[in-house]
Image 1 (cartoon, helix red, strand yellow):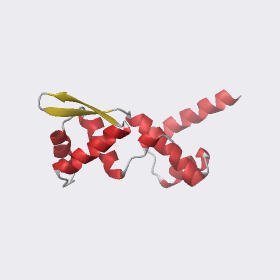
Image 2: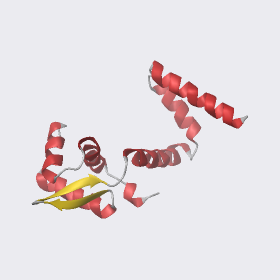
Image 3: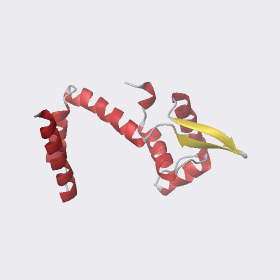
Length: 128
């Protein structure tokens, strides 16, 4: 897989802040994390952002006195890659059993069920 997408839980949390809040300084990321119940120090957040920039996960540019960080990867790209790894590791590359497991173990609302039905119909039509 892509090495830049090997993120720790903490790095993923920092990335989520940037996706949700948009381009931010270390201080702004820190404040958002404090708002989410994370009691991290400024230096901790700076270390994460520096490491993430080295991996190509975030980019930064200087704006006035501070560096502004922004995500270099989309939420969907990270989701797709992490799901691919999960399927490979837990389901030997077969997505079907994972999908069935998710459907069985998660409560789907009417909207989810309709979207799933539509997708099944589209896949069905495509295979004919």
